[in-house]
Length: 486
Image (cartoon, rainbow, N blue to C red; front, side):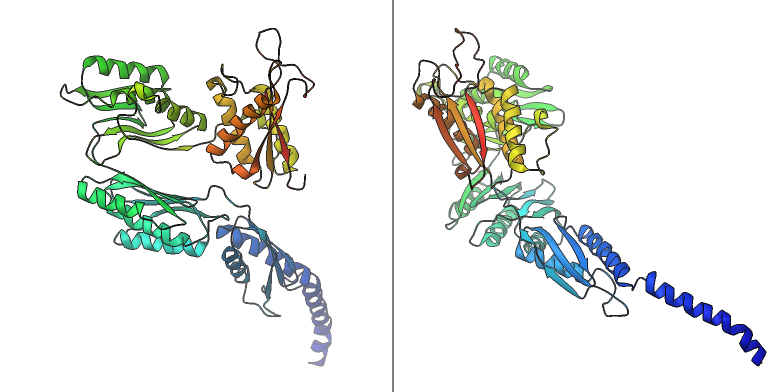
């Protein structure tokens, strides 16, 4: 037996050495290996739970949470996720023991927009921005309750920049009104609650509209609750659909011709002739259809019931299309365009900007934004109409690209717009041009405090804008990107 012990002793000793070597250099509990595994598990848990803004660095079993947090409770919830990411803690079965929250405030979203949509089949779709995951969960639960247990489709995202006051209360108030409509949409954009949709009962329509209008400050409510339309133009998957009633064949041909001249796709005629129908809306349809045909989505229609919306336009389009449509619908009194109430609820969407495709906005944002504005203006100069200070409609695409670049730039950067006067004009002329561009960007949603306008006379820029009456070759508008310390 002793001989067997002697024979096995070297084997046991070798096993002990191997175990010690593995424990010291290869075990997951070795500090370096443990920290690497915990960091991997924690970051995977953050990504899995939707905390794309956050990441973790491990110092042993101590986690440091970093990133741009959209809200304080988002940071706390992310820290809880890290704490539970791997194992149960302790020295032997190692896990994350402490989470140090070292996050930065997230970039505020402006405008801060939340939406709820009710489809004709009763389903609710939630989207847009919310101040926290907790509020998102409470809104989702409220939508489920109001829909009698039917869960909504949830696309909400946590973001910084929510306005003060009872934001959640206003959102839930709008959600409650939405569930009373046959179909529609609630949109809370900063401090403005818009409630739009369809309600066939005139008394209910009036009651709901009054509730929206009575919303208490600092919030304001804007209703657009409609009955049945007499005539509509609608963007559908098949094309631009013209439906409803017109008074004559001549009116039908006129509307079809306008739509075909301006729509990118097919025009589908579903109109019928009704000679006894009022036609005080027809001038509005003629004026609005060229712009509406260029919308991405939406509906334009005439709602003649007493107390109803009148002539209404809803949808999404590039900002210049929306601005020009509003101008077309607000002609002088002699035009007859003021005979029917007009409501335009249209939201701008960004256009593609191929000129900035190679620019990295994350690397040196101020320099990147300056390069982007320069590239857009070099290829798309901003021109003005005969008045000299009103932006030409031919420059709509240029303005839309400038707006898209503005959205790519951090909100902390300032945008200084330089306007150049012609050779026979004064500095005030250049300032008016710069103000026109600044007003366009502000109307499209850029915070006016980020924008400033500077005018130059013909002899101040070192360049002449007069080339003997031909197309101007030097830019009338330039943009300079500034930081708040400049």
